[in-house]
Every structure is written in C-alpha cells, then in structure tokens.
Image (cartoon, rainbow, N blue to C red; front, side, top):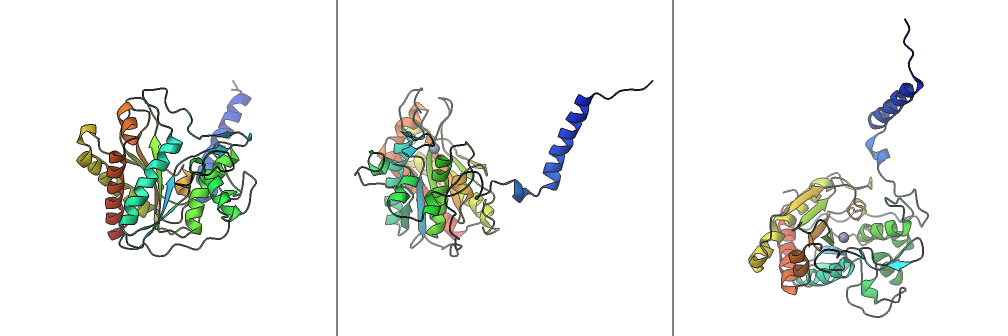
Length: 309
Ligand SMILES: [Zn+2]
C-alpha cells in the first residue's frame, strides 16, 4: 500500500524549513531595520562617535527628547501623535504634557551644570508651519525650522507603521543627538494602558541599529535604565507620598527607533500612565514634575560615576 503525501503538507513543510533557515542562516544584523531602505528621503550624514562618557553632570551634554508633537502625516494632515488618550477618567494630551515635563527636567539638570539640548522647541509661542505654536510641533518640524541638516529630519529609511513621515520624526531625535554628539539621550513620555495601570517604566535597547555603535552601549543603556527605575519612584515617594507610587520596571526592547539609532547611552522614560486618574493628575502637577526631574538628576549622577553598574 502506498501513502500519498498531500501537496498541502509539502507546502507547509517548505514554509517551516524556510522560517528555520531564516533564523539559522541569516545573520542577526541583516534582519534589523536598515536606515537606508523603505521610505524615500535624504541620506543621513556620517556621525562621529560621542566622546568618552563624562563622570559628573557638570558639562555633560544631554539631549532631552519630549515624545510626539503636532506632525504632518503622509496624508498631508496635521495632527497630534497621541490625540485621544482620555476615554478613561482624566484628560492628558501626551504630546503637550511631555513638553511640560521636559521644561522642568531641563531646568533641574541645567542647575546641576549639565548642558541641555532638546529635540523639540520648549518655549517659543510663535506659529510654526502647522499654524500651532512651535513648542507644540514635533521634532521633524522643529529641526527643519532651525536649519538642521535635512538628513536628520527627512531621513531615508525604514518605517514600522507604514507612515514614513512619522518614522522620520521618531528617527530625527536620536539622529540629532548623534549629530550634536551629546553624551546622553533621554526620551520623555507618559504611558497608556488600562485605567488601573500605574507607575514608571523605562525602556532601553541592548544594541544600536547602527553598526558603528560601541559594543558597550547595551550594557550602559541597561545601567542607565536601572538607575532611573530606582531613583525616580524613590524621589516621587519622598515628595508626593500621597500618590503611593510603586516601584518601576525596566524593559529591554529594540523596537523603539528613539533608542535604536542613538550612538550614546539612551533610554525612554515612561514617567506614569496618562490613562490612569491618579497618574494623569500627577502629570499635570509641577510638584510631581520637580520630583521626577530630581530623580532623573540623581539617576544620571549615579550613572556617570559607574556607567556599567
Ligand atoms: Zn509616548
């Protein structure tokens, strides 16, 4: 008796072999998003590596990156990147709220002697290309307006979500930090989740998308994330015990372009959940923002003294 193998099974087997071959035979670096494929745009300039990480905050160059902002999309519509965060109990427009957090963090870090640069305009209220005040606009538009190299804010390259302009805006932030050779890159965000989710999360990448990045970068990113995850909640609990702020978590993820294209230690700090009533109210309170900024200062000081923990 002969057994006939159905063609469907052969196709399935070939697919399985193909998937296995992809992971076994194709080196990891070829599976990573390439900077130069996907969306049309301007080639990025070559970047010099940042100087050796300094040991104290005095003179340290820090790129602060308030997430999101008013952006022109592929469909030529202007809009906020996180337009509908409410739906729950409190309204926080993350695009704007990140700027308010960045203003406070900048002030506290500058007072400690750091040189603070930002990927978005923090103060100026004149109208930008969108008609909105320039401080509300996303990084891509800010960097275009101040005359930064087009390869930074209009970069050729990859898009995770299919919107090349949004991808360019995300990439603009680490690329600008690379161009300015800052010592650190700190992205400021707030989180979204179910209405009960609360607290701080820190995201870091274990390696850079850019092959010229130093091999030690992943360990430094992990250490920076760990320091922030300890110091920020500690300072919040000290200054706002009423909030009953919990411990923070660190999360390794290479998904985020905001970290992935940086040549210097970088993390994304999700300060709290804007979808939670208590966290959302806290994000609108300057006492809370000062506590977060002081926690960041402590974390950065510890990191600079011992950057691999
Ligand atoms: Zn965000």
